[in-house]
Image (cartoon, rainbow, N blue to C red; front, side):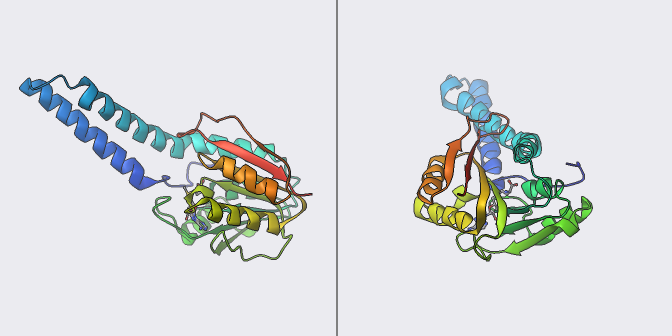
Length: 236
Ligand SMILES: C[S@@+](CC[C@H](N)C(=O)[O-])C[C@H]1O[C@@H](n2cnc3c(N)ncnc32)[C@H](O)[C@@H]1O
């Protein structure tokens, strides 16, 4: 996917807080050494480095790692090119555009509530502009809706994907509701691939109790931080 496309930073507030906290702790460590007050290694230096490193890894993940993982995830679906693909919580369109790029006749639909807490600069217009810049506007459709009440008829999609989105729901019941919606809008034989860094056990259970076949979870994928897993299943 071209570098001209901008997909933002995930959890920008968390990244900012980690960098500020890390910077503050390192400054305190330096001040402690300069004033000879105490040994700062365990108290300030180690936690400071750990916070800064976590913030930096999250930034690198948004900018580089996630793009590689998204491309591989969509490649692994081996799309024929005529599918209807749904990206749940599409944000600025990373998975959405990866899928649209592989469609000749089908369409990729992205649905989101556009939370800027979850992704920087998140907006339907930004996603639409990314699609236009990639030359994919004709293959992309964008809707605004809550993933717990998808505005689509039963059996509308061949494939449903999601990345770092479903864990944002407040509790396991809400996540199960979103997964039940995904199952509902999939066609018979349709496939789900859900990427996340937590709650993937909930997704497995919800897919299983929704009657999906062969629910399975990948090993942790270390190209992203925090590491992610992909949960997959197929509708009977
Ligand atoms: C961390 S961003 C990930 C965006 C995109 N999938 C990606 O990987 O770049 C999480 C996304 O989930 C969306 N989201 C959170 N709660 C939602 C809900 N209840 N319904 C629809 N989208 C939601 C946010 O607006 C945000 O775009």
